[in-house]
Figure 1 (cartoon, one colour):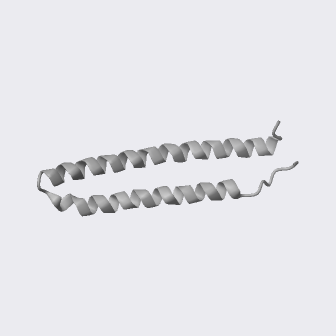
Figure 2: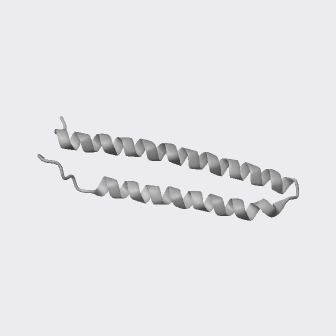
Figure 3: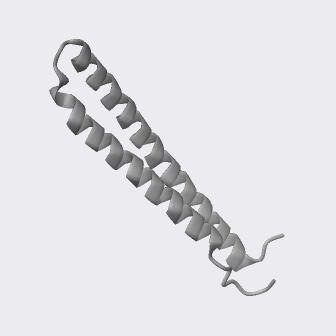
Length: 84
């Protein structure tokens, strides 16, 4: 059984992970929508949207990498709870 402070930390980490996972899902859906809209415009002969959509997609990817690095940092932090 996990002691009280450590249990609270594990619950907090689980909540943080769930929130970040849902935000990640939203970003992936946004990237799929950008890809679909850009592809439709390209097939219609309107390539003007390709560069802004690529920039937005790169921004979404950068946010995902930033969140992944943050999760690694949270996971690597030493436990400060009492007991061992």
